[in-house]
Length: 345
Ligand SMILES: [Zn+2]
Image (cartoon, rainbow, N blue to C red):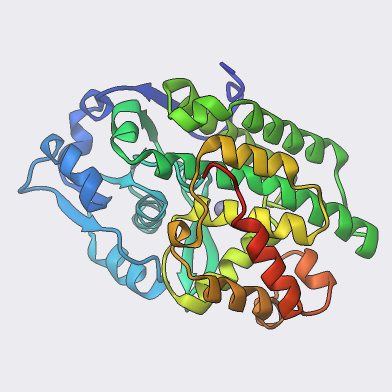
């Protein structure tokens, strides 16, 4: 697996242990640190308590982010140390204030640390604004391994989404004449195949597993940037996740929710989800509704609400929920039952 991201035009990840201690001290003069309690407990000793502004990541709603970014003033650097939301908020503050950006993802549950676009929420809906490439991207094995394994296993979601995204894209080409790029689709499929092949290292969150996931993220982001948008990687599985988020107004562990949605949506698309089921079973990523953090009833509501959601959220590219009728209650129940039938999990 070594080297699949060698040609990446974006940030170059630095792998190792104790990496914060290797950064130039100038970055620590007046830093803004966006983090979460667990990772902060592990790294706070690297920062001077008097000169560091610490901001716990709690919401990515645009109004609070704008006032936060406006109040940060001059600083030496913005650090995002934590999961996807901490990285996204740090990207937003660095972009608004034009400050150096250091990203230290401590769980690999989403691709936020690896893509330029800054994801925010506006009234519960995802919006992409601005662009921020980290000056330093630190992949610290020790910090990542301090988190529960399930958090890092969840990181497969934003690659697994290729499975359902490609179906949407082919179908949009066949039904609507949307441009389909066979080479880009082939590259995306190759990333999915690498993901499936690496299941043991991903399950055990080994150094190789962490490198694999980071390489896959970087390749995926490069592929989407070269193509011009995230069509090769994001589809109806994300649409369903966004719909659930907008209904429940709660944050989720992104990758785990997307993984469950890929399973639900893949079956709704009529695909053979056998390989996805096998992969998720071997990964030992819990996908019970309680693991994902939504109730069965909430997910059922989201499935039945998709048409209404897409009527409002009009900027999403066409996928399986655009093509068909509103799901029947029987279909929704059938999909939900099937998604919970993963032996050994
Ligand atoms: Zn995603």
